[in-house]
Image (cartoon, rainbow, N blue to C red):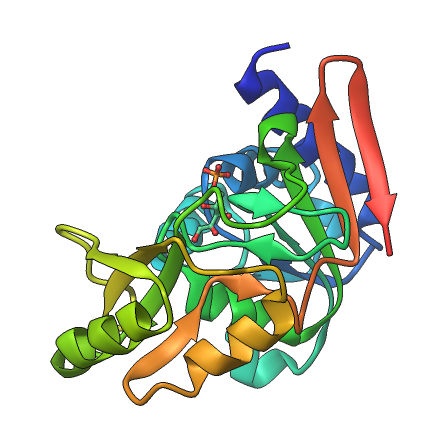
Length: 219
Ligand code: 5RP
């Protein structure tokens, strides 16, 4: 199977987690786009969706799915999203598409987070993918210096403004052996909005598209 076929298979498998009449949280990215397309084929089953980015909201709306406001829906039962990297503890690096803050908000509001990935995203130790950090623009240099002091190599993502009007620093070389601690340490830096480590709110279910089908991992 190609990588796209693996992504599509994982996305299709996530449909099984939807209960009729619920509001589903929907992430961002190419794997999630396969999920959005699959969701559109059963759109009568859901009462609406919460989107983690403007790009996903536009795609959902174009396919006729009602996009709702999280401030009006309250907690959700299900969130479906991709990831850039995942370990066996279902901790993730996300934010390759720049939507990490809204993704973490919707994941936090959801009782179950089903993460859909292709097999290339699985790794023994998080850190092959540079960690995205969303930063308020005036703090860009300050935060970059602090991240260097923490051992990281930050690089400003070019031509990227997040849906929240901020910039992204992609950080290599951080020691992510304790993702939970690193997630909170980075978020303590003044000017950081959030970072792409999903350890405090990791996935509950990981659906991994492989050559021989979809493998389900849980915690
Ligand atoms: C966007 C994300 C995506 O889930 C992540 O980048 C994976 O994307 P793709 O499914 O295109 O590989 O976190 O901010």
